[in-house]
Length: 109
Figure (cartoon, helix red, strand yellow):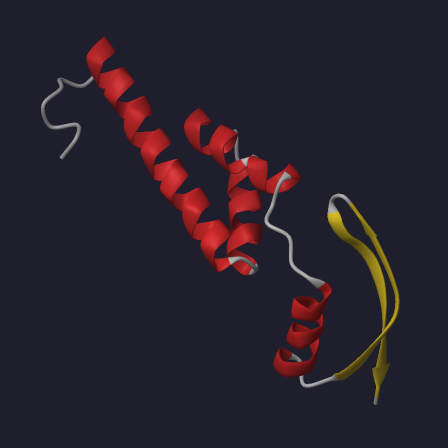
């Protein structure tokens, strides 16, 4: 509906298209941040498709590479235990300002 009032190829059309792409990219970013997990990974993948997607998507979603929402250690442990049906023992855990950087998982068979 946004584009119907512009003739294709004009300067106004190009600006309206950029604006529409920006709004849509911001909605995708909000969706990824709200749902986390695989949605973040899909957003990161989309941000890497600069050869395919409009610039507005790439720039907006690229924050998912450097500033993705962080998960707590307890959330990660819960995923391992509930979703993978594994009893998990976290042996070591290192954290920094960027969140959970590294942890070693030992699985009891």
